[in-house]
Length: 373
Ligand SMILES: Cc1ncc(COP(=O)(O)O)c(C=O)c1O
Image 1 (cartoon, rainbow, N blue to C red):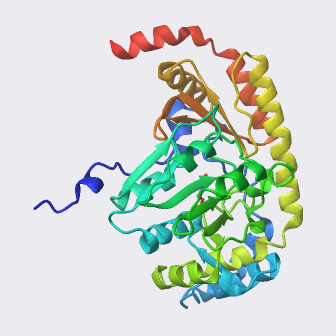
Image 2 (image 1 turned 180 degrees about the horizontal axis):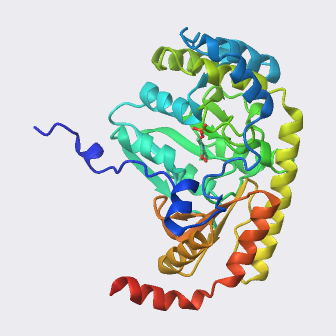
């Protein structure tokens, strides 16, 4: 009897993107921009950092399971505390959802090339993982509705979606929801909610207080706190109560909690981050289109660029690395012919466009023959 079940054996550990220091060393560069993980280029929320500093001396005490942050979030969004859960990033909460709700014969349903974090969590549970193709890089909610079976237990939807950056509209969701039985749990992953909220087509799922929907949000993006690991979710109190039975007792950490409470008041930082992102997204989208690239319309803090083939995507990624720009080729997501570029500072965004303009993609042929030799 093997020690590890086959569905774990077949997984691969998550490979983090290359770090700034690693790339500096490898290519002998002074300036490297990381545009690969959809992080906030302005750094962390200053209010959160100040609060973390204030609480360093209390690290000998265990955290209180996130209660202070739940109370603060409930006040912020006009909910009961019983409707709110917090955890080690939205990834941490997703992990709890998988453990709480999935049984061996259940199926998970989502789009192809869904957010890698969800793919890994769902596959590690060993249940059937079913997908439907994108339609022009958008969720095909009609096809998803048609794919629901009596075994479907969880449907995962990210809005805006990672890695495509696209959204589905309120009307599309309403139509879809009519086909979803109550016994199916919908995870609405809104990690990039803040970037999309001003689009009138975007459905803020806070307004969908259905009993079988859980909304997930994070401090990792707009608040610049990816390293702290803190996220939150809203759902019916019974769903939350069951998640609370499974959640790690002491997540989030005490520093994550105080950072989360303080960041909610950092309106100035959020405002600056949104403005920078809007500028960057426009600049990169239009700039790359002018250079002849297809850029998928994005409502998030990154854009996806599908290329001719995987070799071209590898070549462009590598050439950008040499020029001190880290972007993400989407092989792990299952789209190796595409790259994803996060928005950076104004200077980084301009540098990216200049760098892309200086790369001759027809060199791909040479690059391919070089590597295959
Ligand atoms: C769609 C989506 N959901 C969730 C996450 C994870 O966020 P967190 O850092 O809160 O775990 C990410 C991070 O990239 C994401 O893109």
